[in-house]
Length: 246
Image (tube, rainbow, N blue to C red; front, side, top):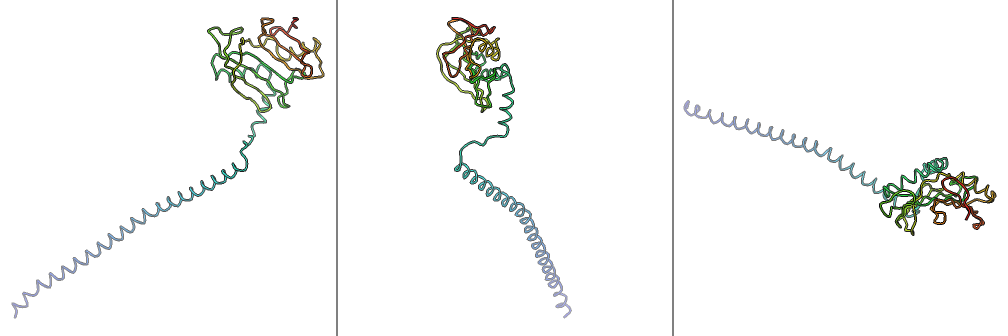
C-alpha cells in the first residue's frame, strides 16, 4: 500500500506544474493581445486624424476652386489693384526727364544698347501732359543697325514703344522704317511749348509735340502742331529751342 501511494505523488506534481504553465501562457497571451490593441490604437488614432485633415483640406480646396470658377464665369475682367491710382499719381508728379529715364530702363531690359528714336506727347496744355486726364507720352526706342551708337546712328526696324498714360506704363513691340537715333532733348518739352506759343501758335487749344531726327534740318527737332489745325506747326531745334525756318 505504501508503495502504491508513494508512486502517485510525482503524477500530481506534474499535473500541478502543467496547470501553472498553462495559466502563465494564457496571461502572457492576454498581455500580448492588449499590447497589440494598444499599438493599433496608437497608430490608428493619428492616422485617422491625418486622413480627416486631408479630407477636410480637399473639400476646402474644391469649394474655393468652384467659387473661383463661378467667379470666372461671371466676369473675366481683371480686378484693379489699390496701388494703381497711387502709381499714376506718382507718375503725374514726375518731370519729363524722370519719365524718360524710367522709359529707358524698360527699353534697356529689352536691348542693352536701345537707342531713343522718337518722343511724342499729346495733348499738351500749359507745357504739361495731363496723363491723369487722358494725356499720353510715348517713347520709341530701337536696336542699333550697326556698330555706331549714339545720336545720328542708323537703327534697325525693330522698335519698342514705351507709353505713359492713364493706365501707367505700357510696353509694346513693332516694326518701323528707316530712322536715326537722337540724344535726349536739351530743349525740354516745357520750354519748347513756351517757345512755340511765342512763335505764333494758339494758347487756347492743346498742342501735339514730337521730338525726332529731321532729315530736312539734319538734327533732332521738336515739331509742335495745334491739334485742331495741324497745318499750324512750328519747328524748334532740339538742342537750344530756337525756332527753325524752312
